[in-house]
Length: 409
Image (tube, rainbow, N blue to C red; front, side, top):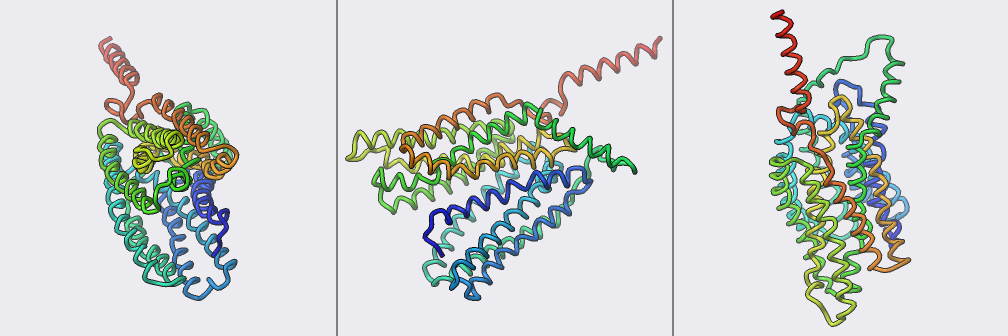
């Protein structure tokens, strides 16, 4: 449809922005609602957008590139936005339905299965693109994408939402007081030092997006690797993601999500740092270097990081948030992360203005700061013995002793 790199770059920007940015408004809407599942079901309505794109391609709209691009970006934005609406409710439901220890196992298993299926999906995509002409090949892919989301929608509709503890509806005439309380709750979230540390950590680790889009170009133009090695990049990232999901799921179950976040943060540092070393080595030795041949390692690092977002950072966020404020924590945190949608653009500007050395070095420093912040993450409340702080236990025991003493007197 276009050879504009800016327009192509809008795909990830619109998708990520549409998914992240509206979540704060959604959280404000549903935070005090006793049931979140209806909002999750409403959010799933956007899944038909893939079929609309397929119908537009089959109907011949591709002969009018501007109209087809407008249709594509509109549908993509609507899908991302509605999926973001559903995700705020889904995160709250899964946190109440699945305990922390079992949640890591569940997420790890889900990522493992989806990774394996993704390998087969990649082969299917290649076969469809090779054997069918445009636009029929892309129309078929979008139709299949919409079809495989149908079983997911059925599964989500069958979820039984657990009740919210201590969730009493506001009494009549208390709407104004409820609104004032809600404003105070948002300020409490921003004042939560654990929340601030976690968000800062996620932003710094997410700065790996400064250079992620440029690894392939760097490998081809600077390290002079053949185009065929790109396939090795995809394989390295996919297989690592599959294996890391299993291992990190066990880590989350045994030690908790903060350790998974630390592993992912360390991997986020390792990727650009390895690329920097390989770049400097190729500059001093233009005839070739073994580091250039080991370049798929940067995609191994990406595979590990991608496996830790849900298992580590999001899982930790679900645990530090109070039950009655979990949607607000999720919505506010994800909306703030919307700033990361600008990372690839900033990385492109930095590369044009400086060099790969500066780009990789800046990314490594930013992600290293994120790793250091993960070292200060405290255990979530549910990970403490008997699911409560020791100070509270001591207070309860003291109260019990006082009551017994009063009874004796």
